[in-house]
Length: 68
Image (cartoon, rainbow, N blue to C red; front, top):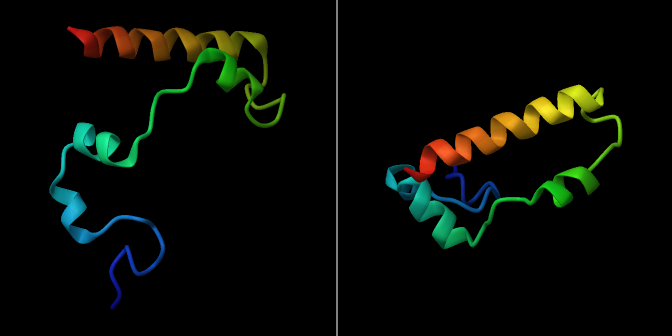
């Protein structure tokens, strides 16, 4: 059996013990801005403006909850 890294996922079995914050730091990822989300993918991705607004409201609420 091959490891995840050997399968091309970019992580190894040792990464399973790392916190999300450490994985983010090592991988150099960052949150997407609302503008990036808006420009991303199919224009019908959200189904409706209301669904998009609900998604953004939930996203912002979860980010605020993680700040404190």
